[in-house]
Length: 161
Image (tube, rainbow, N blue to C red; front, side, top):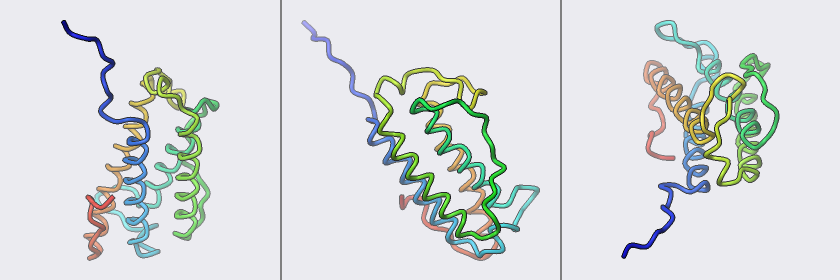
């Protein structure tokens, strides 16, 4: 006779948050590694500056997490006025980290399976939206690694999250 048990998830929500925040900490170190001017102006092959990519990441993570936690659905707005100092981006990055941590506590384990229309555009389960946020960050961080190497700067080790 076999007993029925509830399957264990591969990750629990605390582990998923820790994984995401590990990526965010690494991306923060990548931002820090950029010389000020290069952060705003260095481009290769038609790609955006890393500062513009960071605006996108900031515009997704905090507002997306607020939406997941039950806040209003808002259109994504990458047109952030963060000025022309890298410090402003680091401050916004840290504020977004705090938003994620605060809003994460509001999300029940059942909510991860619910389907949302993220930013009013993308229908996905909550867990899918979160994985997209992480994947998108990794993608842009990879572009930043290319920029840093092109500038003769050794980027942080990608495995040190």
